[in-house]
Structure formats: structure tokens, C-alpha cells
Amino acid sequence: MKLENALKTALEFEAGVWDIYREAMAKTSDEAGKHIFQVLCDEEQEHLDYLRECLAQWQKTGKIKVRTLSPPAAARESIGRGLEELRKTVKPQRTKLNIELELLKKALEAEIRTSEFYREMAAKLDGEGQQLFHHFLEIEDGHVAIVQAEIDNVGNWGFWFDTPEFRLEAE
Image (cartoon, rainbow, N blue to C red; front, side, top):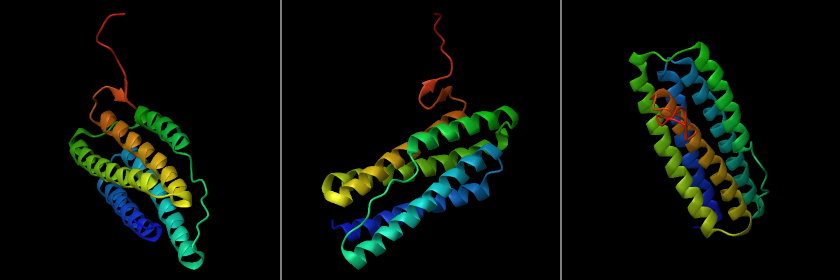
């Protein structure tokens, strides 16, 4: 795949994920859920803007200038801290959890598909394209972890970012 086509496909993936987060924000009444969907939606908007900029550069000059976007690790930590604080004061309403879980599962599927595309592009492209998609892969893998953590949290499955919140074995 050529870089221009990869950028156009990446825009389609990012727009799809952005749509999912906008839908989720509208459908959930859980404040913590709205917060995480808003943060992720804002990040997806940043990705869309940057990819549009890259596509325009490529079409004009045949080159792109790769720059670093918000670091995914910092976003994970920030979202994690914010959600912990929010969950202390606002408990999810059990009747609404099925809706939020379905929205989160939909978001997780989209983030995984997007990560897979970026992984493939990072492996197939070279130079600036490889750099660009490797960076996006790191970000999207961070989004997968964030969404999975929220699924675990909302589902009360005893995990936070893949770490058990309790152990049944005696120490």
C-alpha cells in the first residue's frame, strides 16, 4: 500500500472510532463513562486533524513531517487517575451498565482493528510512513488498554489495567 492510500485508510479508521466515542457520549448517563469517552473522542479528533495535515503535505510535497502526538502512557495515567477519583464519588447505575458495556465493547473492537491496521502499515511502509504509523500504533495500543480497563471496571471483574484489584489466595 502506498503512503497516500494508507493515510486515507487511517482517516477512515480514526473517523469510525471518533463516531463510536461520540455515540457513546450521547448514550451513556454514567459520568465516569462520559469522561472517558470524551477524553478518547478528543484524542481521536487530534489524530484526524494530524492525519489530514499529513495527507495534505504528502499531496503537496510528496513528504510528510512526522511529529509526536500526546503520549499514550501519559494519557493512560491521566485517565486512570481521573476515573479513580470520579468512581469514588459517582457510582455507575446498574441499569445503565449494559449500555455502557456494549458501547465499550464496540469501541474496543474498533480500537483493535485500528491497531492491527497501524501494525501492518508500520511493518510494510518505510521511512516517514513507518515512523508515523509506528507512533499511531503505540497510541492505539494505549487506547485498547484504556477501553479494556474501563470494561473491567464497569463489569466489576476485579481488574484495573490488567492488574487484579484483589487476590483470593492468602499471603
